[in-house]
Length: 285
Image (cartoon, rainbow, N blue to C red):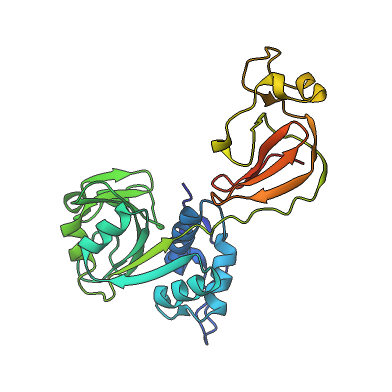
């Protein structure tokens, strides 16, 4: 899990526009850290550091006098990173459904009902625990935060990076904000098969040898391999299924991209899969 706490970034500038006031992510950047949590966790890698996200926010006009305009920031992020999409809503049921489908959301804490802050604040709805409870990641977490004010009665449980909250309390926290929730989805881009020219390569993994293109053609037996292929088979038993060891040198005579999306190659001993789409992994180098 990627988690960012604005209190850890007192040295990253995040000044309000058209003023001489010097501000930082620590003072004003809950939206910046929330954006990092959402986009990096959905992508499964660190697309943005807190510093680069702060710069992106300022550059795209999302830094305003109250902090961060999340709608402006997320719209710009989705435009630049087209695998992401944004939807806004005021419905807690939509938030729960969105989380169950693998999305992540930002909740817009208002001024009237203190669950996550005494004033406006962005927190991340990370997971739906069930239909009534949501795990919240709070980008302004500090020791004792959820022991103060009326928060102990308004949350279900404290966690390392936030809390578990009932959707009814979440609804009260965001009642004076519209949109109350920013739902971000991510669709992993389809992997593209590499270009592999005919020639000699080394296998990076053990590979099964088949009678033709695709697993449906059936595996070859060790006895069906070339003399050199038999030397590099994982088994010496003639009737065993044929597998070539990792690091075996193979000569690719031709390649074919199958309907499954996997890339196969013809070698002297038969046919092997040299790239799997689902894993985006190449097995020759």
